[in-house]
Amino acid sequence: MGLRWNFVAFLSLLFLLASTTKGQSVFDVTRYGAKPNTDITHALLNAWKGACASTSRSKVLIPKGIYLLSQSNLKGPCKSSIEIQVQGTLQAPPDPKGDGLVILEYIDQLTLSGTGVFDGQGKAGWEKNDCHKKKICTKLPMTLKFNFVTNSIVKDITSLDSKNFHINLLGCKNITFEHVTISAPENSPNTDGIHISSSEQIRILNTKISTGDDCVSVGDSNKDITIRDVTCGPGHGISIGSLGKYTKEKAVEGVWVTKCKLIKTTNGVRIKTWPDSAVKYSASDMHFEDIEMIDVSNPILIDQEYCPWNQCNRKIPSSIKISKVSFKNIRGTTVTPVAVKLVCSKSIPCEAVEVADIDLKYNGNKGSITSQCANVKPIISGKQNPRICAEAAPVDAPSID
Image (cartoon, rainbow, N blue to C red; front, side, top):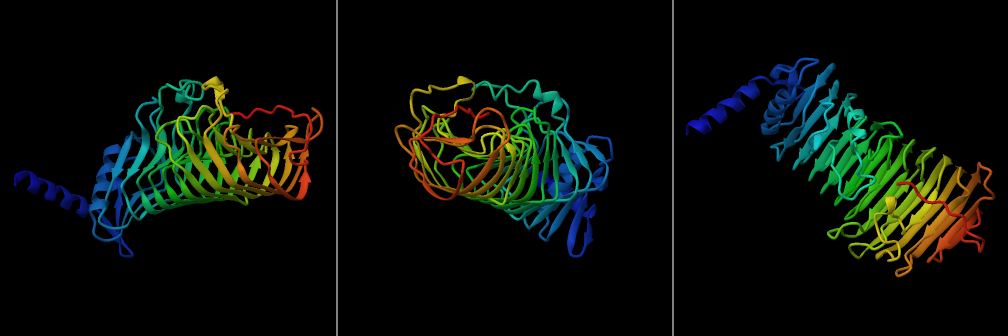
């Protein structure tokens, strides 16, 4: 009885510290002891607990200023819809420890908003990040992790210099990311902008991503993913995969990448699977349409021989079945002569791959623009520049991780 009374009293105190604006209870972290240039981890957690326990709409407010923050696990379920509005800058510790800066779990109807910045202070961790070279490596903390979050919106925020992935989604459903800015140097390893796994109904809209790895990476076990009006660069492009590395992976179905712009990326739009796959499944209904390329390497790519740093047996074909793919209305410039590379599995060739209205110009001096195809018979229509799957001597153009 005493413990329960203490808990109730604690919640009552949290509610007393809240204010109300337009029918929404506001839990300002400064009323829980947060001050600029100090660690606000405990203040944020207490504000979250109060807001999450509220039976009416609530908001956790982080006002303007620079605040220090250690790993913060903000868990639901909450009793009503909840907003986290970040107006200030949240700085991660330089020391690369933990799983993430902010981990959001088991929350329904979350809004993460504001013009604030999540500063991962990644420089201290990048030199220790060797996961792009080794299968077994030390995982560094991500900036924002969404685990089993549903029916939610993320808008207007900025993620800066993450030590690892900027934003990671696991087991999420019906989340929209809109007008998000993601920034890290092009030499920062494993700093994927947004990585999606085991999720469905995810939309990434009107977003700008500059980073050292994939701008957006769609992993395994995903369904109904929309990526639209995304500007990517520098970075490694917009990717589905890599697929087939782990035994518990499941199918990918329904990915639309449309009206995007890629600038000086090391790859354009691509699907990548591992040879000697650990599991067998399908990846289907994937579409890349109305894409602009500006001095991009490897603009259009299916790579079923993806094996960075020789971490696999290339002699055993990939067992991921790729089908129902379209590349349409893709235009701009390439800095590699192989502008279209469709290299599918020898054991399970790609099916129903459509290539239409491709108009790419080669800005380089290593021969003429060309394409390379293997184990695929694409359906070709409209403009072909380069000529798609022409019987010409292939020019090797390996993808970059």
